Image (cartoon, rainbow, N blue to C red; front, top):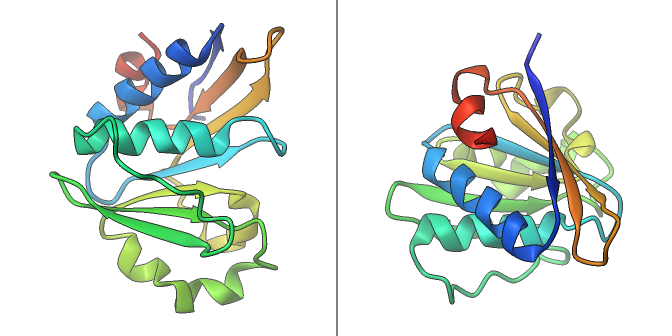
Length: 152
């Protein structure tokens, strides 16, 4: 059973700090599944991860809401940011390049649309609104071997 850790993120800086810790731990083949309601901060979190992993705080990271996937050449490997909100299920993933994307890093919003293609070894990051406007609560599960460094 994967270990689960809940972290209160009082502001955007804390959210970005968690994203930076995650970016430092990413390696080829990793999947990060971002869960939460509309407006929970999934895209903001993915943007912060990608900016940190690229080493470019000004990296343009548009939401893939309409394109469904945006790809990035990071120093370590390619990364792919999927937003599956508009996808009915896993059937459309092949034409989005899912299998090829899995060779690099994938960040997936609305991962329930992956169905049986959801990687069992993924890190799940569930985001929820906190008490203040920019506050979030992140519940992390999976990645037992790397969880300590992530939750520090």
